[in-house]
Image (cartoon, rainbow, N blue to C red):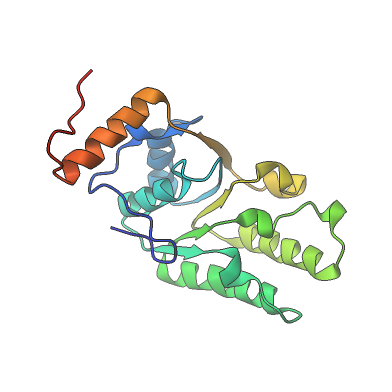
Length: 189
């Protein structure tokens, strides 16, 4: 299975045991199943499982997943970014999809450091859309400290994803090698 745009390949059965996060991801998913709403900021190094968790969450909620990256949303012309952001939220709402915005630090930069007006208007549009959106929104970043502090307050939950621990790496290696039916790669400890 994959998420189109970045081709994130997952084992056929996703396991929260191979994710190193500072929150109980199963409890987070159960709460979202109850409420049907969330604004999540997932942050951590590349490859730590942020996007894979959102795909797992969408599957668990039985909702489509819409993935948008900065390159999908940033426009060259005045007002184009704001329009593309609004369209992404409208489409997710219309289809009942989980909306994942990757590389969100491209949009939610600290407005105090903005050098151009369009940088501020892009942040403002995204914040407005976040507040109005009544579905499940996840935003991922590798550069958490670059995000505007007022923007961070808009999230219901901020979850740090870290690199896998040594036992988690072994578990994941074992799961993947078994799923690929590689001979002689089973690990036992």
